[in-house]
Amino acid sequence: MAVPLQSNNIPTNHRPSLLRVTCLITTTTKSHPNRVKLVVVNPPQSNDPTLQSTWTHRFWVAAGCTTVFASFAKSIIGGFGSHLWLEPALAGFAGYMLADLGSGVYHWAMDNYGDESTPLVGTHIEDSEDHHKWPCTITRRQFANNLHSLARITTLIVLPLDLAFNDHVVHGFISMFAFCVLFCQQFHAWAHGTNSKLPPLVVVLQDTGLLVSRTHHMIHHRKPYNNNYCVVSGAWNKVLDGNKVFEALEMVLYFKLRVRPRSWSDPDSK
Image 1: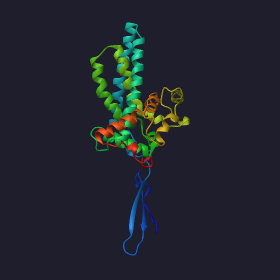
Image 2 (image 1 turned 180 degrees about the vertical axis):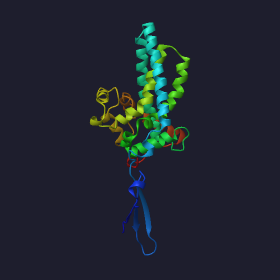
Image 3 (image 1 turned 135 degrees about the vertical axis):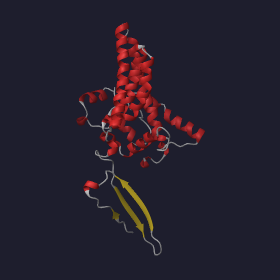
Image 4 (image 1 turned 60 degrees about the vertical axis):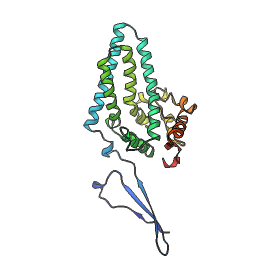
């Protein structure tokens, strides 16, 4: 058996960030050789254009932050005016907890169903699959590049709510929920960071459980790859995983639609 290794000699200044190395495994017989082609793709590097922010990305993140902080302002101003703080605080806590639950449901769906051709969320599904191949790539994404998709959704939903409602309790919920949705990908990126490279405040928030911790989230990237989906605080993971909620949903979808989740595949292929 001959195992030749082929690679292209590309000048450094013209070399793409995704360098493909092709291995040809050749089994020789007297008549026809059988060839199996294996392609190994290195993870994207920090200078890869797909990881860098564009002005469009920055615009949507700025717009999302503006709508969220406008909602925060309405909640705070209403609290000062009414001298009622408990209700908006409780509403904000409910928004925080619901955002964590929502992040888990969305993360589970993107990890297990659909592909890049799925309408509306195809790009998110493709990114999710790439993330499982190269988990630490998320730490190389520039800030706006990482957040712009959720920032766009946040803007389009929260802006009409800012214009339609003035109730400070309602905005206590909206502002906290939208803030966590907008920044959950940043929380996710921090969960792949290291203590020495993270801001000290982030480390404190992770260690106290207010943000999903590094050790907690790393379990999601180990076999069997079907737990710890929530990426805001991770508070719901124990409830969802302990009661096998996602496993039950997968069984229902399989028996009703005959659709297999990707978590049922060989874990090593993920």
